[in-house]
Amino acid sequence: MASGSEDVRRLREALAGLVADDVPELLAEARTEARARVRAVLAEVMAEAMLEQVRRSGRPGPPAPTRPDVPSRVSPSPAGHEDSLGYYLYGVTTSDGAAPPDMGGVDPAHPVSVLMGADLAALVSRVPLAEFNEERLREHLGDIAWVETIARRHEEVLEAAAARGTLIPMRLCSIYRDAGGVHAMLEREAEPMRAALHLVQGRAEWAVKVFNAPRPASSAPSPDQAQPDSGAAYLERRRQAQHHREAADEQQAAACESVHSRLGNLAARAAVIPPQRPEVSGHDGEMLLNGVYLVDDAAVSTFQDEVRVLQEEFAPAGVELVITGPWPAYNFVPDAIGVPA
Amino acid sequence: MSSTGAVTVEHRARNVALIDLLDRLLQGGLVISGDITLAAADVDLVRLDLRILVAAIDKAMGT
Image (tube, rainbow over all chains, first blue to last red; front, side):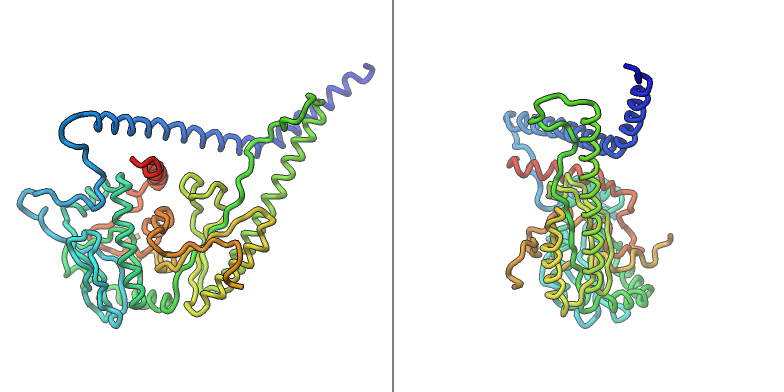
């Protein structure tokens, strides 16, 4: 061929272009691969756990300990402060909504009660400090069954209390050694507490998650591609696939922006929290938006209607909306009060 | 009209997804100067996610 060197030059250019085009794709593939490896590790961990279970069930003698559905009870502990009870704090309400819900607390042996101070009411229940101290809590955090039990009880108490009045929800496991500590906290933080209560009064948190439909991760040639085609056609096909993906991404990003801004317009406050990983989100697609909205109780049906409208409007872009609520205003209370930075 | 539409409304019954709950209870909510609190550093969310996943699979397998 007369123009041999010209062809080589073109080929080089095409290859250079291919590399540039491939960067996002390579990243996506790397992510997929990483995910696959995590799955593999998990499979191994689970296999071990299952084998252990088989071993245990096959072994005669005392039955294997079943997963406790209550937090581990205090084992008869040595005398001393380990026996003592502290106060687990669920939330703070105004004193007029102070009658505590009639239920057990995170430790079901102890009922939910209130401690009053500075015209505020702290929702509390007693917990054994032998289980609820820093060191034990760090250990408990490794036990998802324990975390789930405590988290669900915490939430149930808050839900029952929220039905009775305005409420500031605490983060999981806020514990005081004695009632004096709770009273002192109420007195000390009365002003920021009242401001926080004012913001959430007559409102609740609603969450809207936006997912995309799962898409194939790689652009491998389709199986109906009978003939291996020329390099140029291959490059062109890859480029087009890349182009389609980018267009879809843009469309979905635009959809999320619209969802968040239009729902934000119907809310007193709006925020975005980190998206959940696909492994735990309970959805096959990727979470594109984890939006939270503080909505007036009177505006809830308008808000829900708008979610439906948005879903219909953006379904063609390949996104799905999931709404949850009402929640206590976890994401609309100050991060921290009285905690040294 | 409000009874139609493809939107999933997950009601606040006992079937709240654990991950939605932990999103709030471990990262939201008021942190106050208690005597004992969970330090943010104690909560390794990636590990917790993995544990949630394993627990969900355990449950699905009925173990």
